[in-house]
Length: 128
Image (cartoon, rainbow, N blue to C red; front, side):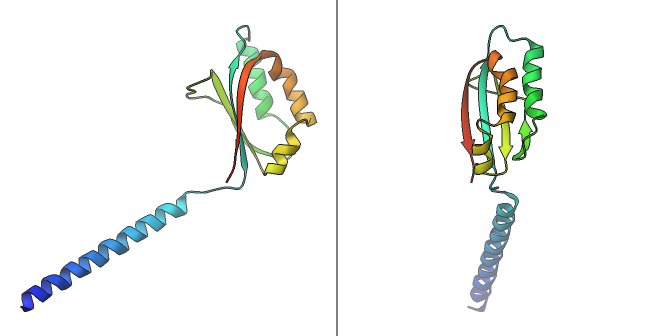
């Protein structure tokens, strides 16, 4: 009978150990994933058939070099796009910063490079 009690105690300790380990791993994993309050402005697009590589580079450089106070980061190199030729992302500090960007002088200046070579685009704005 004592042996059975010992087996039950060892099994219980193992179960508790596995539970604690699993909880620690889960908690550790959760702490690495961020949910920022910034807003990403995702644009997927097709370039016009006659857009030159130089024009495309100038339009993307315009995003990279844009001087707008609410713009934090940009991603410009498309690795894969399932529905369009290209994509880029602009990260804004807040929903208000994105809202203020629409129609701003910075956007109007960049549109001079972008709109003449853009065939069509789809935009999604995402935040937490």
